[in-house]
Figure: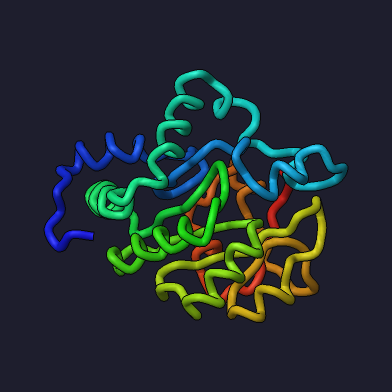
Length: 215
């Protein structure tokens, strides 16, 4: 990545396909098509999995303009300028101090996670949250790099509805989870009109597990 940005904020936003703004979130996010999820594709037709109830395969996510925007974002992931453009776009627009990766979609490769880590490293004043079911991608990243930036919280997500959190693999790499455990922080959004409001538990590495209600 060049030391001096070659993108204006508008150019960066246009290049990455724009940021998303989920109504629940206190911040911007970045979404790619859920139909490209690697693990999700395998679980989509399996009974009682989270992916069989995927909210990102219905509602506004399947509207033509939204689908087209996510396809544009997905197409840019392989571009060597993606990290630089994301840093400019997020750094200019995100004023909350928080950012979520993938309100739709998931990791595609170790290289994808490397780019996300590079964005986080370049923006140390923003706390990033990455929920993922791509355990093997995360494991292979850690075998290669050993750690992620301190401001990037990777939360490994359960596979099944009311299923156990993937605690064993998370503990191997010092990560946190979502799912069912003996001691969980229950996401309060179901009692808050579906919104985070003042809660920032998902971004907090000291909260080992967050349990979400199906939505």
